[in-house]
Length: 461
View 1 (cartoon, rainbow, N blue to C red):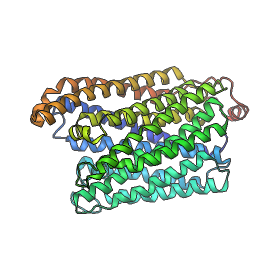
View 2: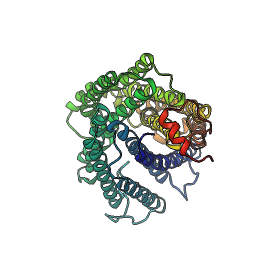
View 3: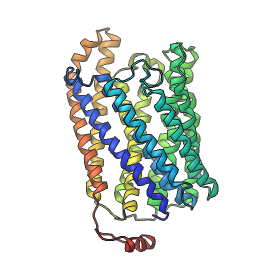
């Protein structure tokens, strides 16, 4: 760690991992509800569990992105963060907003209140006061990071990162617009949901992955930056009009079926490019970096993102196929593998790389960390195949044969049992990861001169 203000990232990563634990635990609980439909229905109805699961996922991923920015921007810009106080204020706002959301959802507080009560839009259920807090925190963050970059060295990594983060914040403003027309509502709703995960978040992903490749492989910066610009261009070119695959059946004009199909097909390209980029960088790299776990997570991120977001997304993105499959368990299969591969694994990769340096104990217990990778990744992959088979059966029975929804759900019970088993593996992997990161080994092997000097000043524990 070269700059003192990089320590800010530690607290963002810590809160992110706490919410990560909450997210997977609630997800496992939901998995059992699919097996036993009456489980906890009087205490925590399924709709509340789903809000907690999806919202905690989004918040912890965002906190991971913010922590990654606070860690890598000083190194890229060659200067400390503009204002550490603002960074901690931003984190406090996020923690307060998260607590407010949890209490509002669980206890169903302020029902119907336009300011304090939850809204009925999926993923955007947050009360308006929480949305306002998110905007304030985002503006603080963007000011802090932008000032740091503007006063320091400019690189392709910080340029693409800023583009993605500014786009992320601006697109969230559509969360405040809720038109009465349902088709129009869904059209603008996808501006947030799709253009985040298949637009601006891809830019953030590409820049963080580029930083990791730069540090872990030793490949020349010029090579990394060329790949980064190509990936960013592909992501924006395909992702913006690729939003059209969500417009097929919501009341928009028919031409969106062709626009959505064509550009959604192209959305595979940036994820394939990221996978190729990661493996080519490792192949060309000259550096035998001691943090093998971070490299494993980076390669795993690129690979699983390609299959989850790219291949599984393509499976049902053409409008002729989507007519039958949308809203089935195939959608859930795509969503789980895509989010895990592209964004969960990415955050765990940067946490794996940065936390030992932030704690001054490099290298840490990598065996446990790499075991957590295989346990979690294996669980998510098995879950994906299970849900894919369940969705295929559901599509045929429900959408082709015309059987009733609940009758079909009963016939998918065995798939839900297997999905719950895979969820157990994911939760165990998450616990193992958190333990491995927060409880590293004490011995230091071949630290650099900066680390040596800093470790000599750190009192032994």
